[in-house]
Amino acid sequence: MNNRQPTLDEVALRAGVSRGTVSRVINNREHVSKKARQAVQTAIEELGYVPSSAARALSSQRRGAVVLAISSDDPALFANLFFAEVISGVNAVIEETDLELLLVLAASERGRARLTRILQSRGADGVMLLALRENDPLSKVAENGGVPVVHGGRPLNRVPQWYVDADNRGGARQAVEHLIATGRSSIATVTGSQDMRVGVDRYLGFREAVALAGLSDSRVAHGDFTEAGGAAAMTRLLDEHPDLDAVFVASDAMAAGALRVLRDRGRTVPGDIAVVGFNDVVTAQHTQPALTTIRQPIEALGREMTRMLVRLINGEQPTPLILPTELVVRESA
Image (cartoon, rainbow, N blue to C red; front, side, top):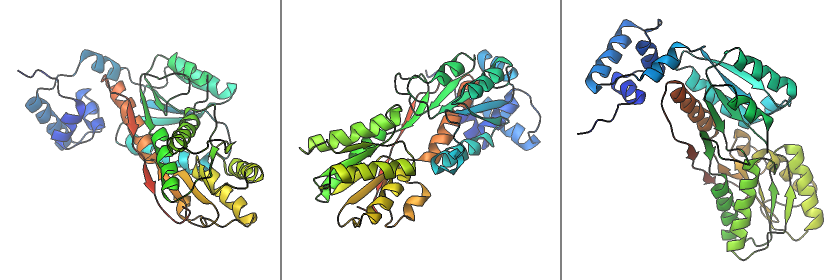
């Protein structure tokens, strides 16, 4: 006999409504139509769903808000299309629930103090963390808050219980394998920040691919995921390794800076030097030439980390998730 307890997702699917609607019906909240309430109640009866006491208790104490805490206080943050797409994904799921979204930029002591006040006042039901750096104090602030915490991307120095990440290492390896397959052999990389797991993983993927091909991994310049950082790193690579014929750049923003330097130096792309980026933000289609890159599902990352947090708030126990990446071939390589 199968005594498995149906999930909220299964109830929502059977009723043809969102998870948030199911939660509101279970907890006898308002703002649910008579038709939707009846559909949920019918689905609960048909599936034999019994809300756990833990889920009921947690739901009944909800403050009605979740926090997206980003370890940055850069005023240019929202010009970064990566963060814009993540926030779009987060908001898409929040709109299906009765929760509000609080955004906290928390790289500074002042920002972390704000998050602490929110959690101490029990002003949020859960926290999502993004862009953590090595030994980032933001992680401890969130995890001492007494609410569920989901990481968008794994931190560098440990593996948290709940996270959503992309296959950064595998994606970087695929980028370099593509360059090798097109006949390139003097391959360089512009890394991302090495105090972030994403930067380290993409660098490791580069090193693995060139090592397996019997090529050198010595052509390296460290960047910081910004366009200016990519331009500065590309300048160093050209000065130190004038023989290079390809470069894997660990983000599209840095790749845009690298392409500008190559153009200014009179190097053709992909004729003299092939370039592959990472992320596939919308601007990758509009660089000159259009950028070959590794697509990671950025908006999906935002959606899935929010879904994971909502499930935790509802008393469920989701598992960590790593999203796949894929190569998108355009003109630059």
